[in-house]
Each structure stands twice: as C-alpha cells, then as structure tokens.
Image (tube, rainbow, N blue to C red; front, side):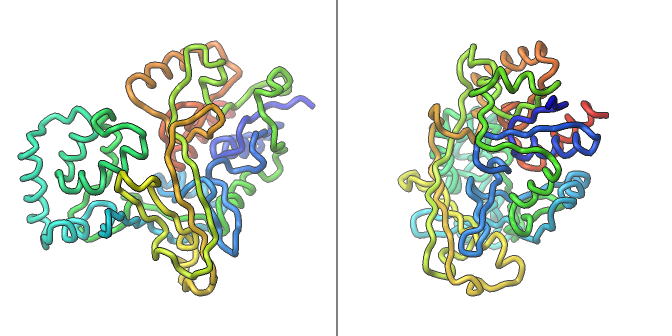
Length: 373
C-alpha cells in the first residue's frame, strides 16, 4: 500500500500531524522504534497509579487554541505544578517566591526580599551577565544561587554554570508573592487516565507499527509514502555528516513502595551537587490528590529518581544542548533540509529546540496546516 505520509515517531508531534492528515482523508502510517506510542510522554498504570515513565510532564499553556485542541482527546485534571527543593536538610518552595525568600532570609515583605537580592547583586558586581551563573545571581542573589541553582543545574547539564549560556536560566520564574504555582500560564493540568490514552485518541483510525526503526529499513520506508514527517534526530537523518549534535540524557530508577505517601509532593528537586539525582517524582500526586482523593485510597506509591547524563550512542536524547557550538552545527543540518522537499522535520529532535508540550502541539498544527491547507 502506498501512503500519503509516513510519520516517523509516535510522540506528540507525530500524533498531532497524523490526526490532522487523517482528518483530511490522507493515508497515514506511523512508525516508532519503541514498543509503545506517546514518545517521552508515555504513561502506564502501576498499582493503580499513572506513572510518567520518562519524567514528569505537566501540560501548561496560555495559548487557548492549543488548550482547546488537546481537550478533544482527554479530560484534564486541575494539577498545579508546585515543586519543592531540598538542600541538605532544608526545604524551599519553587518557583522562587516570597515563601522561598522568607525561608531563606526571614524576610516578610516583597520590599525586604528585593532589598536583599539587590544587595547581593551589587556585592557580586554583575551588570551584564555573561553566563548562567551570573544570570542566576542577577535574578535571585548569591544565597539562592549557591543553594538552589548551582548544584542542580551543573548536574542537569553536566557542566559548571560558568560554562553554560545565560539564556537557560532566563525562563526561571521569580515572584514577589506567596504563590507556589511554578507556571505562569492560563491553563494547566494532566490528562486523567494518562498521556498514553490521550495519544491513543489522537491516533484513532491511523495505522501504527511499533518496534520499527526507520534507519534499519530506510530504503523501504522512504518509498512507502509520498512524504515523510520525521521527528527523530536531524543529525542522524543526514548520517551525522557534520558531526553529532549534543544532547543530555536521563536515567530513571523507578520503584514501588509499600507506603501511602513518600514525600508529600509530586516533584522534589535535590539541589546539592553531591546527590547524584536531580529530583524524585512521586507519581500518585499528579492525579489522585488534585482530584480530591486522599493518598490512602491507593495504599502503595511509585517513585522515580532522575539521573542526568551525557547522551551515549544508545541513550535516548532528552534535552538539546543549545549552546553556540551546537546551534551553529544545527544550522548546517538545517540548510540540508532545503534539498529535502518531501520531508517535514518536527519536534525537539527534528528541530533541535527545547520545546514544552504546548510548543510541540502548536508547531505540529502549524506544519499540518502549511502542508494540508
């Protein structure tokens, strides 16, 4: 059978594009090298709990069109992302807000908190931040940087903060109010029943083949459809002819515990450099508590420790290293796409960008509309 579109990757970008193409009457085949759909937002039920297998995923957006779009495929709960950070034996609220400042310095008012930050910034002598360390100090002062940013960020990216670009930390929320909501978006939540079910609904009526590696049978796949939607690594598509783009990867340790409530929050960050993992996720809090159920309604709990690492050849890529060197390398690969009119590149890996889920949906919809009309 000849298809109109071969979609490589059953993650969010591929699923949205496949759904839109099918709505237009196109013949679509989706393949994925993993044994499941939904890519990195894959969830599965363990002990009655929806477990986020590849790290915490909270859908948030201020784009009403995107929010309305995903509502077609799932009912979302009212989960609000309010992580906390552990440094040694102390616990602080994230994002950095008045609760954080009160715990750190004993201040009571926004004016006192701003004065403390201004004093530390002045003492550091930073005017034009040249790297992540200087940008972080400029935002929150030296105390918070040393305790809650420095170790965590170095673990996450595998480099000292002085070697990381300043823009990475600019998205970090800093608020002079007593509000623990991490995201500053109009809409936020998690699909009830998990992301896998949401992606299943997107792919309803679309042919999907799992455990299929595009590169293992590339010659066959390239002739099975008129066009390809490629959501894998762009450098791999071109045989890494200019060299490999760098990514950070993650290793997950998940365990079931015979207790009702391990840490009292869905996400707890561990900010000390000496602790090898960056955070512990307790999955039941993504759904059960925010829906009004008590933790005791499910007698066990599931936790996951996240260990960041450099990406090896067999590891999954998670975070593009969007520094100057890698962005320049991506630009060279991007030029090659002009000679590929029958290939659409999308998603974090295909476009080498740090996209949140709402960005992926928006990009996939834009690509589908440009292609399908």
